[in-house]
Every structure is written in C-alpha cells, then in structure tokens.
Image 1 (cartoon, rainbow, N blue to C red):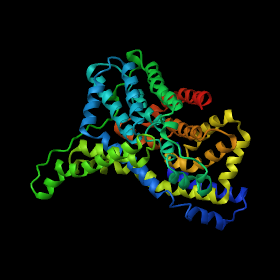
Image 2 (image 1 turned 180 degrees about the vertical axis):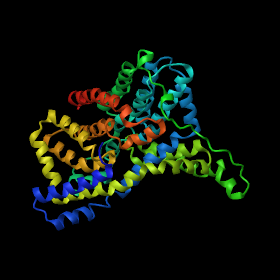
Image 3 (image 1 turned 180 degrees about the horizontal axis):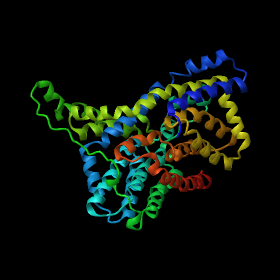
Image 4 (image 1 turned 135 degrees about the vertical axis):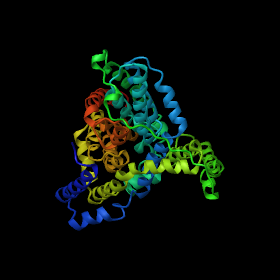
Length: 439
C-alpha cells in the first residue's frame, strides 16, 4: 500500500524544493517565491476546474437512465465467461476514449451488472476479473477525447501557461489530428481496444472450479429514489423538462457554432465539458435529477482540488529555479531520438504513482518532456503522446482512480491487482512497441 496521493504530493513538493536548492543556484527565498508566486501555487486554477468538470459531467452522464438501460441490454448478450469479460473490457475502453470520467463509472457499472446478469443466467464467471476488465479503460483514456495532455496543447495560450513565455512562444500548438487522431494513436489506442479484451478472454475461467460469482461479494443494491409529485411552483420548476431546455438549447447552439468553426482539430477541455454537460442535462431531463447526479459525483473531485495547487507549485519551483531546464538537458544527453520516447514513457509511468492525475502529471512533466524533445529532435506530438501513454499505463497499479470502481462493485484492490498487473505488462509492450515503430 502507498500513502494517500495528497501526502505524496506534499512529499514531492518538498523533494522538488530540496533538489532546486542542491542542483541550482537558487535560494530558499527563491524556492518559496517560485512555489507561491505567479508561476506557482495558483497558476492551474482554471485547469483544475476543467479537470473537475470532466470528472463530474462524465460521472453525471453515466448515471442517466438511458446509459443504464444500454448497460442492461449489453450485459444480457454474453453466453460464456470469456465473452463476458471481453465485452466488459471493450465497453470500458471504448467509453474511456470518449471521456475518462464517463468510463470510470460506466466500467464499474458494466462489470457489476455483468456479474449479476451472469449469475441469473447460470454463466459461471470470475467476478474479480470482470471488475479488473471494467477498470481497463483507465489504462487507455489519455489517447482519447478527454486526454489532458493532447487537449492542453491545441492553443498558444495553454502552451504559454504550461511552458512559460519563452518556450511556449516558440512551440507551435498541435491539432488533435497530430495527437488524438494521428495515425500513431489510432493504431496504438485502437490496438488496445482489441488487445485487452483478448487478454481478458484468455484469463477467464474455463471450468466451474475457477469461477467466483458476484454472490461471494458484498455488492450493494441500487435503490432508485421514489418519484415525488411536485406540489408547489418551485418544485414544478425543479422537475420541469422545459426549464432544462432553456439551458440546453443555447448550449447546443453554441456547440454547433464551435464545431462548424473548428471541427475536431482544436478540441479543448472546455468543448469536451460542454458536450458532456449538454448531453447530461438533456438525458436527465429535469434540473433536480441533474443536480442530484452532480452532487453524487462531486466527492470524486477532492483529490484534484487539493493536489492541483501543489502540482502548480512544483511547476513554479522547477521553472523559476531552472530545475526543469536542467532535467531536460539530462534527458536529452542520455537519450537518442530512438530511445527518448521509451524513456519518457517509462518515466511517466513512474511519476504517475506520485501524481495520479493525468492533468497534474502533464503540468509537472510536460515542460521537461517538451524541452528535452526539442533538444533531441523528437516531434513535439510524439513527446506529448509518450507522456500520455505512460501516465495511463500504470493506473493499473495506482489505487487512486480505482476507489469509485471498488465502491460500486464491492471488491477490494487485492482481488483485482493480479489481473491488472498482468494486463499492464502486456499493454506496456504494445505501447512501447508502438512508440518505437510509429513515433
């Protein structure tokens, strides 16, 4: 077991400050100023809110009646344990490529309902493996449309905010067709969509003696709220679809204008959140239902709210002290163009244990990766995706984002860790091979 990520963020802040004092000519005053100054502690407030909304709006969309009905239809399909596990993984990964917050909940719900459906139909499955399959979307999300790193390099403003004025000014923004929709990512992320379900299929039990059904675990039953008949004018407004449409209509119109003007090439976190907000409102139908869904989701933001200021402070220390430039120079001097992407991927996987948020990790590692790529001569787009792949890869051993899944499915981390570790190993070979051959 590792300490809570908030504790790790505090220790990482201390380590960064000590390294700055030891390896650069900065002073204690300089470290504190860099940590709390304009380039430090409060620099990522807008980014923090974007990441919170990606989680909350995705979570709220996952809880809509339509999504739950689709889940019920999907889990009735498999006739064998292998097919059940493979289908859970496929749905989890496909959903994660749309939005990681959505996948976090959909993957858990599909795994749980698959376990219940198979129990009712007499299909003997290994329930912890189904749950592991439901978590695999968190190993693939950063190559999708909510990937923090690819979405934060589409505008010059975001680049300057992350990289600083000097490096940001000489770094051109990247279209999503160079990152998320690039041939390299389509092959790598599309390959995971096939590879991981196949691995789950082969790990599935072949006999009843290997099966462990959902009945062994303490899985809470859903208790849908009892319908309330509105009696007062405020209650009628809270449960009015018309009131929802008053917000949905301009949101949808604004989105149409955005995509007519930009297409998918300049997709950013704000656009992703608007899509999820609009869809969630429309599918929940009433303001009260959507508000309840958001209230249920907000608890998951606590880590982002607490940790992002610390990540921003780490960025500030590294930028103002020259530590980021020093690390980038070391990376460039020890790596060739061919090995740089693999080393970046592996280091990102390691850093993810300390900075479990993809957005937070990009804020901390992004400036180093970009500067080193510039020195080595590696395409900026490939460096971005190497960080993205490494960050998502070790989520299979990182318990931070598994907490909602474990709560919904009733299993513990030790029940699934053996499966997720093996899946991570196989996927790691695929990811590194893709970076070497296609990056």
